[in-house]
Image (cartoon, rainbow, N blue to C red):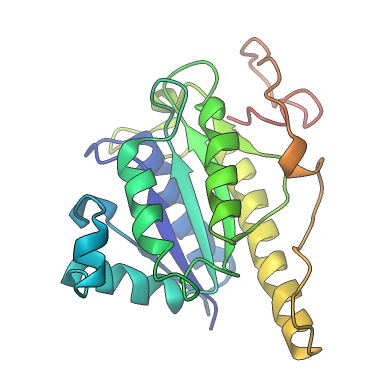
Length: 231
């Protein structure tokens, strides 16, 4: 059974990023009933402190590391705070990047998206987040990045993301994530010591620029216009 861990970079109760991940969970349940998806509440983690880590961490950190270590893939949704990832998400990745040489993030398939009430969908935070994941030796999913703009307008009355266009983009990201998990599993079965990062469509992630965002339109947005701003 494929296990997926969902991480929201926002602590807000009505977070659009958390709503996007709840939609991801529903998509997984509908399309891959044998898989499981659970959320990792990063707000429970203390500020990273090397002394605490050396002394044996805390129960919340131990649970977080075990959850990620047991996962086949992660899906992270981040807001953009002042052009960067939120401190609470950076803090969680700092904890998960340890212990040195045995990080649960190393070799873990990881997909990234962002959501924002603004017109750019939080896309400015994605390159920095992907760089952080590279530093942690995670294997990021190559896919046209998903940034859900005007995300608060994509929710229904109960706060769930039901917008067809947003769901279509999330479904594609889920498909790419499971494809990456399958590729990694096959490479490991083939006995490769260092599996090649799985790639799907899109340009190489490490040299990705942040393009301009088109004006909102009523109909579906084409992939070539909105590679970084699917909504």
